[in-house]
Length: 179
Image (cartoon, rainbow, N blue to C red):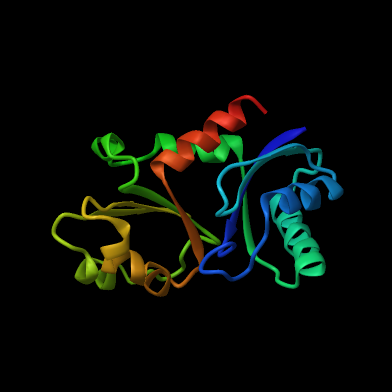
């Protein structure tokens, strides 16, 4: 069985797309996932499954949530190895000292024609950004909520994605190591 990390986009935010974690665990278990563990309400799950194709599993998860809760969230499904590689490739190691200010955005695809100039224009002087295939790294020392770069990320890259801060990723990776 492979270890998967499921990152859900836009659930339990602003009173919309409500999906209690106990319900999420039940949906995943009904789909044959084992050892399902969730972390915080924004939609992070670590689990095991015999199926090897992450894209197919992600579609099945979204469809099952649509059926049970009336909305089909975007689900990015990574293997534990993929998450670990992305974390090891972090170009801003000094940002790890303030883990809530270092973010990795996992993209739905490698951007075909990213507008990096638009991101550079939006970037605050204190911010640093790097795109590596389907992962975007952002160190925002003044906070992600104030970051114009973060707000324009998807439109400039031309793909959707979901971000997690370093603290959350470390906890998810800890769960994956014991899955």
